Image 1 (cartoon, helix red, strand yellow):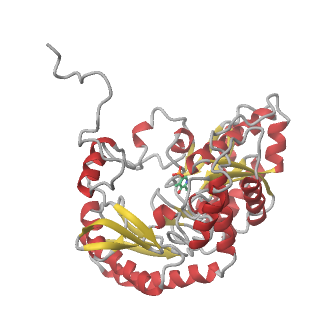
Image 2 (image 1 turned 45 degrees about the vertical axis):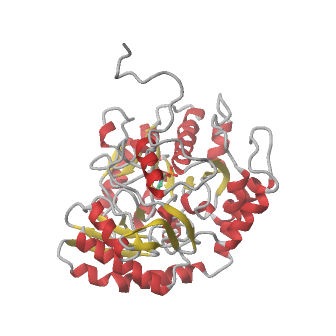
Image 3 (image 1 turned 45 degrees about the horizontal axis):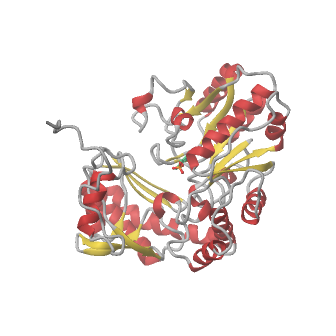
Length: 454
Ligand SMILES: *Cc1c(COP(=O)(O)O)cnc(C)c1O
């Protein structure tokens, strides 16, 4: 008798039946297959929430395969997690992808090089703060943070100080979901609390006092300096998100603390890493958030908006001091080389996206959205259950005094014709820079609605 609990050997067809490759999937079948087989971000398996099916997107609108809450089109309030700064199907980016597709989609980067990657690296060096000079192209933000950390640890190892292998960060941060990045994410209440006994133990300072415009807290700054000094002998680097802590809680802090970090790191011989994966490419009103402080890090990560949200690519940039330090070591190479390193398709679109951004008065667009968000979200501050409303650049945040009911809040936003993805106690938006004033107002109304429902 076959054991009923052991599936029969051999290939299994999907539970919902094998879809006909020639036909578009019926949305119902698609959702069955999705639930049965596909992991979603931070989700259980099988999923407990039904995602919306997007058939296509253009400009700032997502077109749904089947209506939800009576809507078949949603204004995108998320820029696909900070990335789609120019909106969807931008003709310039579509054309860049197509032109590169006609040359080659990919070729390995070991022993070979190509124009899109070289142009992109040179462009990144040009637009990021001096003295960042060398570029490691990675395939996702988390991997670029892994590379940044490896650079820092290897730098000290090469200089004969392998004891400097820990990292210091402040609480409330988020740096990605792979192992090293997880170890510097907020250790409490965050997404990685489960792993607290297993991850490398890093040094945590208190979260920076909130408020972009708040006068810097001298006591906090002193404690930060002291902690860096106290642990300097074992610290490879300090790593933080400059000015905006994103997925760790959507908080803003005074740029002054970045100057404090720069001084303390110089004084105590510790490297400084800025993770600009969320903040880069204009989101906070400066091209890079470190521009608010006028300091430059030794290593900097960029990602998310790098390709305008088209393809996955990130980069870790470093100074000549770091690169030369590594190259003087016993093992003079940086042993990292992702299969898809420097992917030509992603690099070509990234170049086009950067040109598109810098070819317009992007700062004015971000300011325009900032005023729209300030005006449109003001009323949310008076809602019961709302703790704080804050806006910086093209980022608007409504913080509740309780965990958001994600399903109810999402439904409320969709009813208002807007796509939002609330989490923890936050309903927030970072719209594409091409979002028109009416759509910004609509997003604000939806955020307010979602905050009231959630
Ligand atoms: C999203 C994010 C990452 C991780 O990037 P992935 O591309 O998702 O791996 C790292 N740091 C910050 C600040 C981010 O916002």
